[in-house]
Amino acid sequence: MSGPGAATRAAVSASALCAGYLATYFVSTALPTPLFWYAPLGRHVVWSVHPAELACDFYGRVALALAVGAACGALAWALTRGASPARLARALRLLGAWTAALLVFTAALYVYRLAGRRGSPMPLPPDYQAR
Amino acid sequence: MSRVAALALSLSLAVPSGGFEAIASRAGARSHDASCARMQAWVDAHPRDPRAGRGLVWMAELRLVDARADLALPLFARAARDFAGSEWGWEGEKGVADLDLARHSYASAIATYDRLATLPGPYWRYVGRTSAKAARAARRRWHVFLLLAALLTIGLGVRLFRARRALWPPPEELTYALPVAAVMLLACLRQPAGEAHAVATVALGALVLLYAHGVHLRARAASAPARALEALLGLCEAAALLYCAVVASGLWARFAETLTSGAER
Image 1 (cartoon, rainbow over the protein chains, first blue to last red):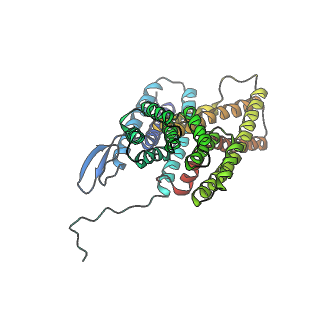
Image 2: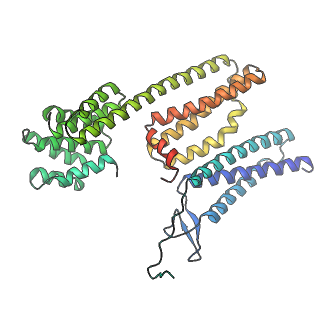
Image 3: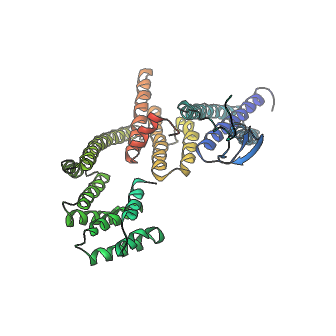
């Protein structure tokens, strides 16, 4: 397949990647999912649901979502092999709608979670002396 | 720790030494059934002991920790009857009223709370007044729930009836919402039962509403204004479904707190 058909097939795969990425981002946020967390103070990575030390989950969550999204994209690429243009167009419309719905849903979840967040400072070390 | 568990623990810790105290203070070391059986035997052997009322309420609270309202009710009722006019009799009355409230028997619960609010002393005045106020609000929500549930059911029935010749295949709109419903259902797997019930109700109920709207629009060609009206109705139905799910799952207080205090409180 080449030309418009190949382009549509690539678009279907990209949409599947986006939908898988967003769904994983949402589910891994809503469920206690073990992830790689980066601890900037110790400069090391922790595999945990929620580490006790100061750490950020962003890189691990994005990596997990990208991995699942890539798997979804590859699956869509394999499943659409030899598909008719009409079928590809329908799949693209459906996956586009799924991606849009998941984007709104996941973004709303994060806006809701972060809107009222107030950062709490780490406790000062015991040997700290104010200058 | 839940309020009920905390009360059961405080009742256990509050008692001095002796037969009664040995049973109450060792509740953590035995199963609740075994503790209640021992306390029941003690209460039956000492029916006129002033601590028997406390023992009855203690057993009832343990039963509530285990979500056994059916076993807690007769214990509260006996405390209210046999120790009327005492602290434990009033605790028994309040326990019965709380269980009435949970069964949507609002009139009897509110009457009891109002009566407790007339007792001497600031504690019962406060408990009676705030409980009666909360019960009246819960009754209003329950009536709104019944009204909305009836309207949703009627709307669903009318749409399905009008589209009865074209119910299959499912409309395309339904497939658009599938992943959102799927992630919602996945997300409620690790939630407490009440919250999982509410989320699952919203996710599955929304799919049913979407199906009804889809087949209705497919079966009856509608003008653009009619479609806009249908979309507006759909949004109202989604809000009504959310309200019904929250009220039916007993999550109204938590829902309101989450809206006002944010996600992480």
